[in-house]
Length: 458
Image 1 (cartoon, rainbow, N blue to C red):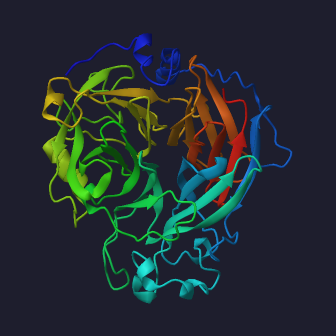
Image 2 (cartoon, rainbow, N blue to C red):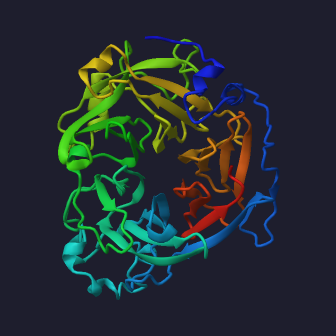
């Protein structure tokens, strides 16, 4: 195992984080400096009682649970992961997950008494629940006009899945929606769950035929990201003893055609524990150290006993604490582990792919994994969930707690709070920038609202 000391210039290759060493030191120190100053200034109390933002920023609610959509259905609740794509005539296509379970009628798209269910043929659902409890998770798609600051069109684009939590965009203009659920077919459910589904980013595509990508594995999926150079997909798993997965498709851009599923391991370590829970100094994963990576082939990936992570551990795969948000930026992968770290407040890892990623040559020039951030101060950062990257190089992090913040890290290494939810005791979810980087879209999950935040990002 190679352990290289962190130096400031190691951050130069990723997102322009020139001063990130100061941030890492603050997070890993038992008594970090609480310096929340930023170029944007302090958060201003919102007179409407919803969202505190810096002075030059503004927000607008653009979509709410229960709004009537253009296809006649209602906007579902529990909005979660999102992605944006460039649409025609300057519009922005936003694909949005909904983390809805069967029988959660109030958060479904079909009305208070499911009266709109008859408008859809059974074949539109991945799982119709034998007509007793249709699965109500899925995605909606919005077409947003950034000039008029309003949604022009929105419709149901995937239905019949369970608890679509996060996912990720692809370079070929689609969204991978992930089921955070591993229920099996029974006397109610017609099919097994725990899969990914691909949804094209179309301005008016209607409901996508719900075909699970089984070759990407069956487990408690959370998020994915795609390396546009190789087409390889990286995946997180929301479990306290989760794996990080890599899917190498046979054909670039065609995930459903099959491929190889693997789990991340640390070279020269068997089942390395990255969580840092109750671990001594010698065994602890330290911020700033880079660890060479190897990948382990997985078999029986449909995992009828939901034991894929256990079999991965037995083969030597590394253990992670609740892998959640994941994003690919400037040639690297960032992913969040919500309750990792000595204080259980969260970690963010950085994975740097090999120049020969996914080939036999990668063993001679391996990828590296770095514990990028580990928070020991809840006021600084707690329960990191979705992550994304601003066009100016800032890392933007959603918190998953009762009074959450959106936390940023500047290229100069300053830590700041970009937003604070004062209106609802509910997490932020799905933060993502428009293709031009001018608008940040984010959900407040509990009330089921989607906001567009504008400000001087550059």
